[in-house]
Length: 240
Image (cartoon, rainbow, N blue to C red; front, side, top):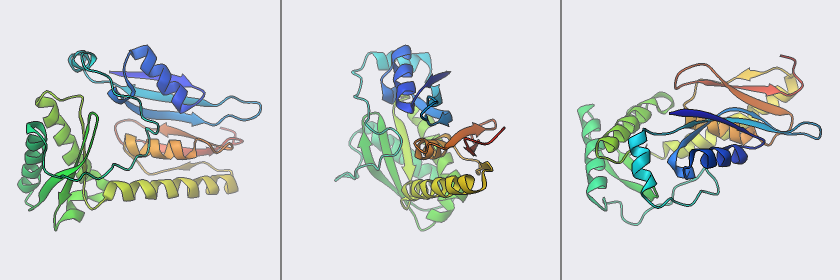
């Protein structure tokens, strides 16, 4: 299900969503729809869209102890694990499934555990064909990740998010998006014209929104329909 919440800051909107839905922070996904920093005479405004799983999955989660909320829910570099070998049957099944998917695509690879966090499992694909598996702007990697998450759901683990990476693409992409966001903000401030960025998935859009959220004369909003939307970066004095 999808819900929208509004607060003066992103954290306030997320806390409101968690309280109203009765969920822990790691039990739902957040997409920032609009972000406006506050000023001396104007309050900040952040609109988020909350995506929750189906009722059956939520019912199962409610029976489990809730994990503590993360201090930084936007950009976190996963810690490396000492043992990349699957620790249990679920991890082994997801690793084997991901390896099979890549091999069905026609590419040899090895898949190992990259990191483990509460309700989150990271997988690493090593292959001579990593650039193909990653694809343009990571779309092939996103597709593999989507399949891995669907499979995890079929194993009864809808509440566990699977993150698939190769050649540290996601970290490099994250750093690139932060740089692009700051450069775009400078362009908007200099020209007073809005800039519409390339289509991005929800995670990438959120990085841009959060990066620019504290810049007082810049605001951002998502535009478009579907999974891949665009972020518009605007100067606050711009008449629209």
